[in-house]
Image (cartoon, rainbow, N blue to C red; front, side, top):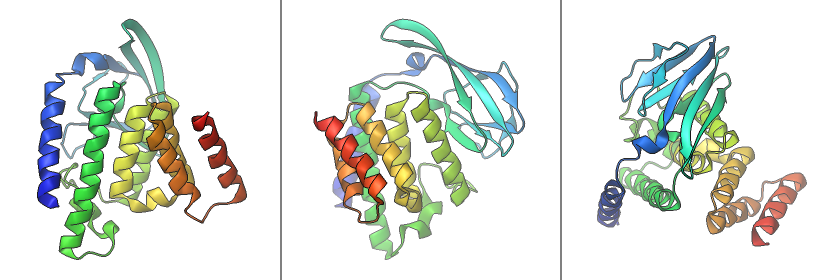
Length: 243
């Protein structure tokens, strides 16, 4: 099973590489306003550094706001061939990757979604081989983050999920869904919270992945831990998709 997963990952990586460089499609993202504790991390470095209004962010940057920090980003981005500018507000206690602030084509979304499913499966196989009964034990072994200090901190996961919510509220539904799936893999307890799962399912629906969204709504509905109001919300969402 692991060999099959490795082979599939290789095929997907090749397919993603053949799609070409999408850096230009991301446009330019600059810091417009800052308040309080706001820092940026470049690439895989472990160091968070200060940032100033007017700074242009790199595609491999991550941005973090503290308990009393906030920021406004100015995104110059073309959509459907039409140049446009929009603002993104980062509330306190958020971590967001600049690479997620972009729109994906359906082809890109499906490739990345398949990759995320393979990662989730290989993560499960690795845990079984190590005979670890609880996935939360190995949060610090995340290969995607390079095992950087602090990445296994549950509060880091919450801040990243807050960042995914910023993506959702800003209309980046595809990257929101992908980011949230990855976080549920690394921080399983986050996936047990109704509002978190609902956001991911809603993001899939708004990204035009109807069957994926219906599966998520259905799994939530069958969890057996919902209130009447929560069940009503899910029935409403599912009915809207079926229509």
